[in-house]
Length: 164
Image (tube, rainbow, N blue to C red):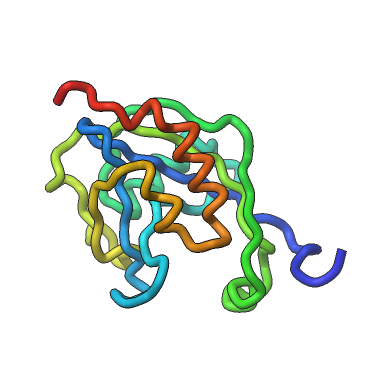
């Protein structure tokens, strides 16, 4: 292996957060600007040390959207991975070739005002919205699109309403 392929993957978790109405939360990255392409994504973030992935996803939800008022619906049991394009590898100091992720489906149990992008000092997102699960692959940056396509397939059963 040479170059980026010799680098390790960064361990990460992702949250597919569903409303009671069966929509999924997407958030706009604050660091890209409102006119950037592919600025919307699902909450995700790194696993700290030997942290359990289920605990990590709750921590990431608190850090990124300011709430843990959720219930676990399901997960994709295997690690999903993607490689960063060369410019992204360089941007992050060539420490990782990409990310390997564990994805969790969760139901949001709170009210929309409980989602607080400003709950912490350095917000990752500056806007959020509920959207159709089927729309998320088109929102994803191309190198993440296969993961979002998998989420749209595997988590489709959670995009149903619970009557609320």
